Length: 251
Image (cartoon, rainbow, N blue to C red):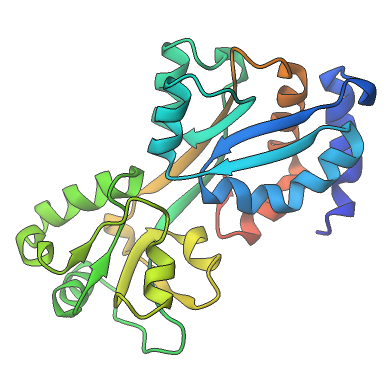
């Protein structure tokens, strides 16, 4: 689906937001890389229709949550579901705007052009990790919580510790693409976004975890109606092909 193909849906959402183009402003969105990937396609149509220019500010979702808690101004957040829920409880986000937008599974990244490891079974995945010279996954993140627990349950946490790099930023796929690390584990869209990295495959279904990204409007935003309109667009049928093209499923 082309960006222009979404204009009608964006226009409808802009009307629902009830804001005239004369009142337009930048719409500051806090999220992780997956948010930016979707907004690259959705944003231009929404801006054209509503007059509001979406500005996406990204980092690891946990970092963005702390920036919100620190009082940094924004209009819309798209974070991991439990982070969004916590911010709603803290009064930072508006409860009735909560919406699950997309979800992504965890994949394994290799440097493009290199051989792909065996991920066909849990035992094969375990063997691949043990035989790898180095691995990387985020220092903190929803996928990290799952992987740390999984490696402990598999009995390989200590064996992996010495050869694991945990970056503080969303640079897992870049480190693999640069040849710094042999294997990277992160949500699949992150891998697809880096040209020099290649998706070897998702981790086995039996140990997979899907990360849900959930939106809500800032309680302090002066552009709440526009932000609500953007959520409606992100939840519309027109956006589903965009989400799928980025390696995810609708939330």
